[in-house]
Image (cartoon, rainbow, N blue to C red; front, top):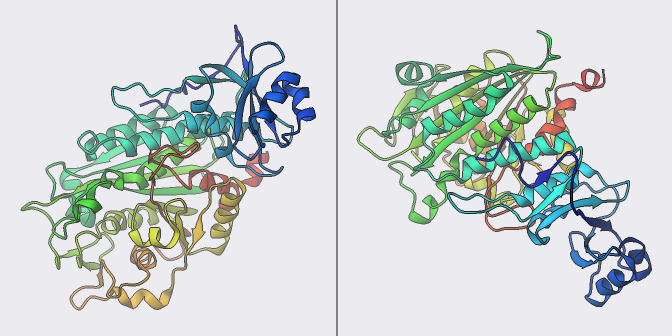
Amino acid sequence: MAVKGLKCIATGRRKGAVSVIHGVRTAGEKALSGLVGAAGARFAVKTGFMAKPGEHAIVPAADGGIAALLGLPPAGTADPFVFGALARALPEGTWRFALPPDVNAGQATLGFALGAYRFTLGKEGAASATLYDESPDPLAVETARSIWLGRDLINLPANLLGPSELTDHAVAAVEPFGAKTKVIKGAALEKAYPLLAHVGNGSDRKPRVVLVSWAGSKATKDAPLLSLVGKGVCFDSGGYDLKPASGMLRMKKDMGGAATVLALARLIMARDLPVRLEMRLGCVENSVSGHAMRPLDVVTARNGLTVEIGNTDAEGRLVMADLLTEASEAKPSLLLDVATLTGAARVALGPDIPALMCNDDDVAAAMISAGTAVSDPLWRLPLWDGYREWMRSSVADVNNISSRPFAGAITAALFLDRFVSSGVRWAHIDSYAWNDQTRPGRPEGGEIPGLRAIFASLPQALRLTDLLNS
């Protein structure tokens, strides 16, 4: 798993030829000739280069080598995926960017790195082109490393990533930053997280909970406490309410929420934000066996609520509930969870836009605004109180499914809301965590949408602006 370095980026002093990628907004021959020479400009025009955002062309360079032209979006647009095709499309060799001053070089580096990523097991998948930057933007590099980590975890097949393996990967990812880790399993897990245990007991690969705590080098004892919770269902068969084969096909990605918050935690640590950080990952498998949970089981949660299991395939909210309760006990400044929770969110928003549900308007506004600014969109859905009664049970305090076939993403969030303490600012993100097809910067497979939006929102959401500017 390539998280320590990005093979697509070369740093330090460079010996040998380095070709240039020119970012342009015009396809005029006169303007292009000033960049690549007359021959290269004529070649670009004759071959139909239009300088559309993301469009690229390989042309003769004025020095006798080759150069690349890349169409840029209008000024002020921060979209790294404009640069996402280059690592795979450029000829083998070392390249550097030559961009207008209004273009964020870090976005270019990030897009190049995200496009270079491929997941392979024993198969060569590295991009042939290398980006040279003597001093690359640290945020771009660490963001790419964190997203690569999350993508790798989601892409691992379920036989190679069960609850124990996910636990090991999480611990290995955070310990280099000095984080404290604790793994809960067995009887201790049964006692502390009864709902999660009830989901995981159906599998021979027993559940684990990973607890992580960390503080930035500039974080005081009164620094904001950010608490992260991730759904780590390593494979979801649906349990006794068994999924059809088509619905089970991609269920190795059902730990995408855990991968996302782990990637986010890694980025926060790598950038040494002045915060106190806690992270909880519920690592579990939802299987069918003589020990598996059954429809209409009733389980008492950590917070004392009794929960009726209306459907065993609504297991993600059970995995998250006790973790949210425990996280709330520390009264964090912000509690954030990410989960591949409902198909309803995908029906509403499609695969690219995670659904955000939040009990604090300021936090929600910060996340939405940041997502727009960095081209990593989130879309807010309401925590609509009128739907709470749909989760009623005749034998328990709450059912884990709704009695109505509507608003599935909202009712799932309303279930989780019962396990968040009053007064705790809480945001819930329902993510797809997958690319169905390869696009520039977004290869088919595991994906970490929302990470850049969340990270960019933290200064406002946690009121860190003064600390970061000091």
